Image (cartoon, rainbow, N blue to C red; front, side, top):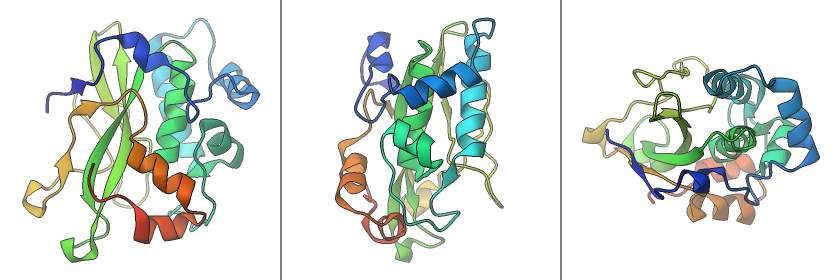
Length: 202
């Protein structure tokens, strides 16, 4: 799939946002811990990806009610749904001058179309030395999900089945999609959000 940038200005993918609050002392402490000046952008991107994928729990996987949204909040509580985890990964990388955007998929919520659909969030990272965007999914691995950091073939958490009306959205967004932010701000129970309130399309 050919990815389409929402903005042609790479600096837009470095913006600090309410949800991507990399000036937060908590984020700064973590970036000081994770990164050093001798690392390449590729190394930093993989380190950040591995950290968010493996060290920040997905709310559904741990059956937690807590709703997190802003990157510093996700880091503080070390949990969030995919929307929140994508905010943290973007925050860590943008703090290092690595352009990072937001991508989305439309997936079946569970195992059949009858059980509904949801919008799933992941990230795109621009690797300047390769002059290319790569998509990565730091949702968190478990049985049946094995997302990896890869600059060649994508190794995402979920493969799209177009015959079942799943969809890859090609746009790399500068900001988290308003529909995803709306549910995190409106509802107070992450499990309830996951089952009943995730948007079904963009």
